[in-house]
Length: 344
Length: 115
Image (cartoon, rainbow over all chains, first blue to last red; front, side, top):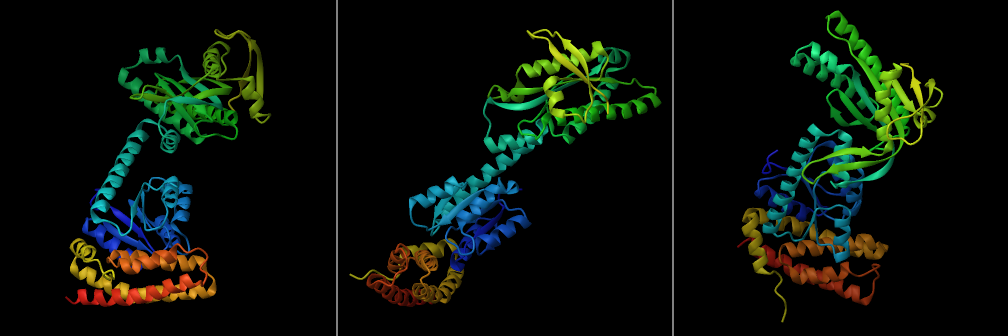
C-alpha cells in the first residue's frame, strides 16, 4: 500500500465538516470514505480495511470516545491510526482521547498544512509498524508477535506458570553420518514441519532450535488453561506423527527416526533475553533444566516421553503414567520423581 | 465597534486550500444546515435535552469557524459551555445573538459567494 493511495475514513456528524475534511484529504491524494456517526464508522471498519481514521468526538448515537473504546477492544483494529479532529472544549477531553489510544489531535477548523503533516507522519508510522510485523512473523510465532505489539519490546521477563518440553531425535548424529548433508537437511526440515504442526495445534511456542533439538514453551506469553495437559497432548501427537512418517521412510528405504521428549511444569521466568539489537523470547528456571534432563534420560530408560511430578499431577488420570521412581540428575540437589507416559 | 461577520483572511485561506467552487458548495451546505442547528438549540432547550443542546451549539460553532464567522461562533461557543440547557435570561440573550449573527454571516457569505 503506497501512502498516497491510502484509504481514510472520515467520521463526523456534521455535513460541512465531513465534506471539507474529505475534500482536504482528497486534495492530498488520499481516498476518503465518510461516516456520520460512531456506529456507522464501526460498521464500515468491520466491513473493510482502512489505513487511517479521522474521528470527531461530539456525535450522536456513538461519540468519538466510545469509538476509541470499541477499537481498543477489537484485535483486528489495534493497528488503525486514529487522528481526532474536533473543536471539543477542554484540554482534559484531548488528554482523554490520547489516553484512549488516539495517535494525534487536530483542532477544528483543521489547518490544511498541519493536516498534511500529521497524516503523512501517522501513515508512515503505520507503514513501518506493518513492515516490522511482517518481518517479525518470519522469526517469531504469532503469540510472540502479538505480545510484542501489545506490550512493546523490552528486555526482561515475568514469572509465569508454564510447562517446558524438550524434544530431540534419538541417535541423530549416527543418522546424519550415514547420509549426505543435503538429505540430512531435508530430513530436519520435514521433522521441524511435522513437530511445529503438533506444537502449534496445542498452542506451544518454540523458543529454541538447535540441530535436531527443540525447546517448547506452553503457557507463555499467552496463558493456557492447563499448560501441562497441552504439552503432554502435543508430545503424544508428535510421537503419532513420527510413527506415520517412519512408515513412509521405511517404504522409501530411508532411515526412521525416534524421539525423546522430556516435560516439566512449574514457575519459570519468560520474556525477551539478549540485547536491544538481538533478542529472543525464552524462559529460564530450574524447570527448564529439569525438562532437558528428562529428555536426556529417555535414552537410558528407553521410554519416549518422560514427565515430572508436577506435570503428572496436572494432566490427571486420563493420561495413565508409569512411575519410574526417583532419579538423581546433575545440577539437582534432590532426587526427582520421574514418570513415563504411554504413546496414547 | 461591531465585529465583521466574516473574517476574510480565514475565508480566503479556505478558498485557496479547497478551491472556490468547492467552497461555494460548502457555503450552500452550511446555509442549508445551520437553520436546522439553531432550531435544534431551541427544541433541546424546551425539551430539557442538554446533550442535544450542547451538540447543536458545538456544530454551529465549529461550522462558523470554518468560514471565519467568528462573531457567530462566539455566542455558539458560550451556549456550548452552558451547562444544563436552562432557559435563563443569559441563554435566551445568547440565542438571540446567534439568530442575529447568523443572518449577518449568511448575508456576507452569499455576497462573497457571488463575487
